[in-house]
Each structure stands twice: as structure tokens, then as C-alpha cells.
Image (cartoon, rainbow, N blue to C red; front, side, top):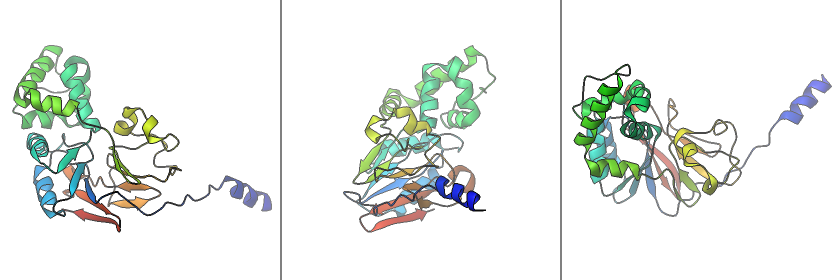
Length: 244
């Protein structure tokens, strides 16, 4: 008995204490939209006025309104978007449709193509069909929108709060990260608290409700499937969650 308790004591990890959320100025972060323009426009209208808004990636795919979402976010003067893995998959398709197209189409790209008026392509289509679909998509998006997507940053921060799409390596300083980690995540992100005091606001992993725990602020509430899109409003007084 004593030996077992001693081993448990040795294996226990010390709790990491986090300072309260302290952004330099108030701002809002919206979780994964995934083509739900109806939810996005409603949520933006419900957020505090004259406060900047960050979309934490995955604007597109799965939902039926990716074209409308991209156009709205591009034009909105208060919104900044970050790169999500679905935006990366789309750009990979644009760059190499025959090799990277099937993966994107399996993960919601078919719905995005349809929103831009491109049909007749699936993950099993041949290289010629995929290339024609890419050309049609590029033409429908236009060079300005493609370049805007290419130029998306993968991290933003204010005070002791950082915003990324998927997560971060808890053992690596944020400024030393490979951007791919912010876009695709890290296996230790949800297991190990950071030791540098940063709160990380993120999407990518669906949660049944927004969560604030161990330095992580999780806000992907599965909008495309649940009909619930969530934003975190961060001020020096703390964090408030607003959902559609």
C-alpha cells in the first residue's frame, strides 16, 4: 500500500498557476465557422461594437456557405482571420490538385467548391477532372481572394493571450514555433499546460461547450453540425463566451 501511494505521489504533476487573462486591449475571437455564414453574421452583430474580432481559422468547408463567409470576412473592417488547416488544405488543392485534391475533398472541400459553383468532382476523380475543378475554383474566387488566403497569419497575440487555430507545443516558446504546429496542432497541447503564462485561444478540436482551463480557451463548438458558433470576448476583466 505504501509503495503504491509513493509511486502515485512521484508521478503526480504539479499544478501550473496562470495569471488572469490580461489582453492589452479588449478583443473577440470566433471559433471555427466552417461555411456557416448565417451563424457568423448573427454572431458578429451580437459582439461588442468597436472591438476587433479575430476568426481562429477554418472559415470554410463542410457548411454550404464558404463563398459567402470568405467574402464577408475579407470585406469586414473589424475582422482579422488566421490560417486554419482547412484553408491550408484548400491552398494545397489550388497548388497541386491531382495530389492534394482528394484529401481536401474528403474533408469538406466538395461543399466549398459547390458554394463557388463548381460541381462534378469528388475525391475519386481523375487528375484531369481535379485540375479543371481547380481552374474553375480559381476563376470563381479571383486572384485577390486567393492572395488574401495565402497571406493569412497563423498567430495573433495581445498581452498574455495568444490566438492560433489548432494549438501549440507547450514546451516551445511561441516565437520559435513552426507555423504548421499552430495550423495542425501538437500532441501535447491538451495534455501539458504551458509554463510561460500565455493563455492560448484556439479552435480545431470540437468541444461540447466553450472551455477555459489550464491556459487553454477552447471555442470550437462544431458550428457546421451543431448550429452553435461561439466567440470569446477577452477583456482585462476576464473572458465572456457568446454563442449563436
